[in-house]
Image 1 (cartoon, chains in turn red, yellow):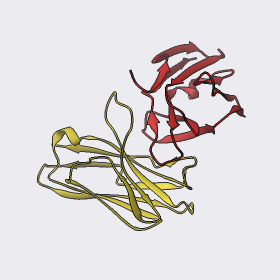
Image 2: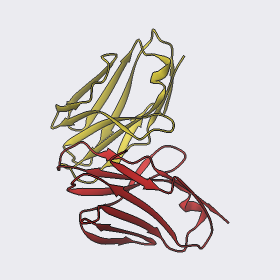
Image 3: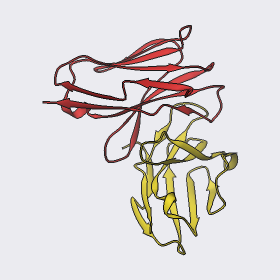
Image 4: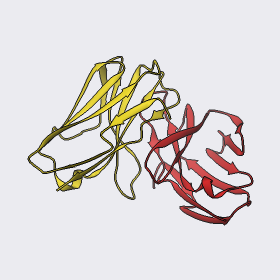
Length: 109
Length: 111
């Protein structure tokens, strides 16, 4: 079993739908990262959080440290949100992150 | 634009060639990373440099040779690669163990 599990692996939705991507981890962490990778390859950091909830535009990330679980939500989804969303955790405030396999999201117009 | 620039974006090389990937950041970050991303696999950390000193080397074969002349520049020297080394190589930087900023990646094909 991987130490960072994401679900679903693939998600297809219609424009405007509310999207939820989940990340569960099995190790103690100091922080959790959500990142976005578009087909061109570049990766963009969306959130880094260690507790509670963060919001940026239509994106919301939550984390429950006790349950070792985080969710990434996208409100009013748009085709430009189509990308791979990756969860990664930092176990001990060191430079090694443990990476999830990613969730491929497709938003249809 | 993340502030991290990688060149070249695409590279095709034979198994006997020697080439280098370059990464540059002017974000004032102290840490720089090389990651490998193969199809259908999570990112694999290859090397980490903190203030020009290598802090992580994840059992990477010696045909990959990193160089960090200063906190703003990172190179990955490639020689006698194998076809299975074909992948997307991503550079990233961070301030301490904070948020990562990635370059666009260098897509390497080894023939």
